[in-house]
Image (cartoon, one colour):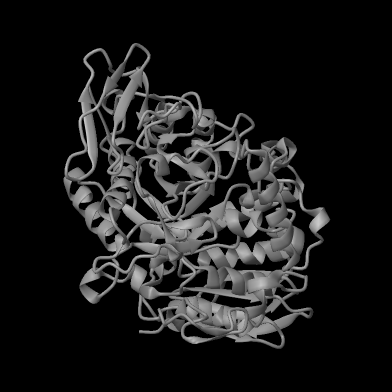
Length: 584
């Protein structure tokens, strides 16, 4: 077989297998070294020796790291897996319900094979798309996955490459699409050997994680190729149905063709070749609608992005605690109204938190290009104690939040355990293996949380195994008390969402929202469905069209005299409106 590696600045490259060391030929005009080793094949362990180095380095494009990110790479045959559901077609994003999960804490075993056992549960819940937090190999046994360093290899403690394929195949067999979170804006701090081979980073630009990924300087075209090839690999060889692109606002790219445009173009070409729908979903705090605007209209051509403004506006109304950090920009019911109607709250207006004007309008775009949520890994895990929304807001307000998320004009996303108000936190944890890095991360977390008003000494140490273990879901509680009640609430909401054409229509301007900022009630009408909620301290009676029928209601919500509904504090009701009340 042929071994190849990109190392444009090296003077000598050798490949070391179990049996022999062989000099490589190169570099060619694009910086690649190659050599044929007849005795090597699937299962062969190997590494590269750069300019006579004492250490043998793993392959930056390694498909398998069975001994961890510091050990040798192993040759993996992508074509050997026996797919059972290769013809699967994912459902459209416009009608999706997304479920985000972290492999290591989703089940007691913390593996992809164990997660297969929960696919049937997710199908019954009504989920259409499973979004996996990053599975690319990172240092240590446990972590969130955003410190990946071997980006082509599946983290071995999760089960390695075949385990991911088994999970995807099982999900497809149940009719569920699989999305994968990928991190292209930085490498992890431990086990990243790409710099030994080539200028993957550009130190002229800084990010919170160090030098920016090299998307525009010398040799950047091969760095872009590294990330585009990685994205295409997941979708082509692992049958992943789409990617969530982490923190694209951290990219520094002033090229004529932005990296995101290039990735979108290549994804569309692969989609055509595979004849299977593929998705690109961005995380961005730029409030820039060009990310999800078609390239023909001057945008980057991504399919969707997360919508933090909706989350922040909703959480600030729910939480019974002082707001700090970016939440200081929120806290008015009218901001929640604006998010539901126009997507971005900060659409070219002044942000007190940022101390500058932020964003631009997105009200002209279909709202299914944005994901809405009240919990995700960041918004839970980046709280000091990893506590979920029912802890800070109460169980009844959590039900109101669920109703607004799932009936919103956005594509709803749920975070693991949210659907039964899981009592387990989701803390930040990371097994960095390097004591100095672990100490720096722990101290950095304490400093960061001080800005949000938390006592630094209360912050769990990310490096301790118990921090990770505390975050594992307790599935038994889902059948008990308030947890069981919440699970039924979510199941009913999702069933309503998926069965109602009105709740799947996302054309701009279709959500009609009114609110009272002083009394803290809000109504949202989407076609034949109307949602009424009360987050105030007093009961309120609201007028509804005569003949309206309550479909779902949380506690103490009842219709009176045919044309009024009384909402107790912290309650929500979802109504079906009579045909006579609908606009022509």
